Length: 251
Image (cartoon, rainbow, N blue to C red; front, side):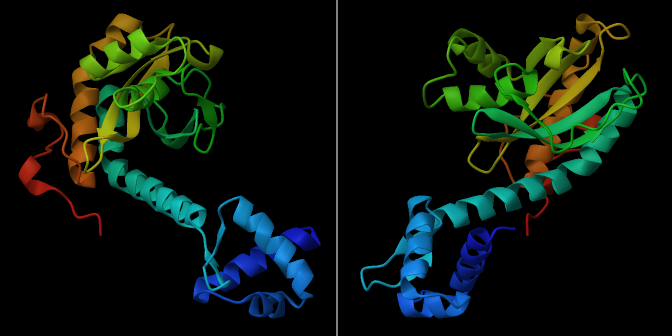
């Protein structure tokens, strides 16, 4: 690790105890005030540090935003895990959970199906993909499109996904797979994540996969309810046992 990066991270960590003066910041990393000031200004430019009116420095909003996002993603994965496992067992296909970060999809969880195209293929957990080029990404983009501009060239498609409540895709990631995806709603009704079912195209046709959409929507609703969200009920609660009166606590 470079000395500058090490100093910046140490300085940022010291702000966790509360606002500090320039002198205190310099002392925390053992450098001259001019060096500390350069680091603080760089961190401030990126939103990691905020300068107060009394010339002290505190943690910036960017740090809080990243922390909240990380906690939300971990929580969603933990809440969704048993429902994804049950869906995987019922349908035999690969199931996934993902969130939207900027213009990409970040895969948080994946359970391989019995028809995995390549048993040796590495898991997508932690991998990213184009949001516009995947069903799971377009489900998440469709939620954003309701309140703002949609991705270029996708307005009509995202509007259809929003009306239908799910998205389908063939040959995702240039792999021979088909996929259907549905959103997981948070407490404000917005999509906080999305879950998907996928399978090799030579084993499960797109039409066959679409027939699993009720199972997928039921699972997405169950995760939403367990996460504390308020989705619009669409499907039979008997598939996965989700009931609005039995929401799990997020604490």
